[in-house]
Image (spheres, rainbow, N blue to C red):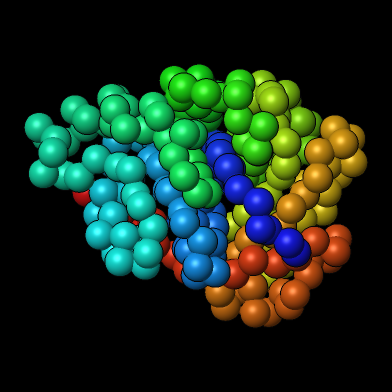
Length: 223
């Protein structure tokens, strides 16, 4: 896959879809290729799981992380509802921009707080789907959810049950997300899974989509 041009991706999804994990791993993938990467924490819906605890670790990997640090906040949760000022101008930064957006319909609206959304042709909004969550557990529910989030430019199957995830669980999600893709005409860019499950799946899922292994960082981000 050729990825020489500027990449701007916003990851949205329901609670526990794994959108933050997918966003972090994508940013690390791009940084590992020697690209200039800006990872932006725009999750103002869930103040307890943020990029703050792993910010330095991610910056040590060679990227810029725009996120609050715990020492900059007043206490548990207060800064969870405010956007860091630098984030508003993130789309004007040089290099790739990966946006971790808050969960749910309300979280997706955070994207509207950024300057230049309408003037950024590279922007792709990617919905991360976990077909094992109550709001997205059937094809119909996923369809309804995507329509509420519109516009959505691509889908990622990240169906999982945490530590209980098996290849069969992921493949079930792959089939459902593929059906949604066919109905809406929105491409599935990948299936993502924990490294061990991804190894068992192989290079592609049962629907022919590439499998991207994930390193799990978010279990360590409760602050």
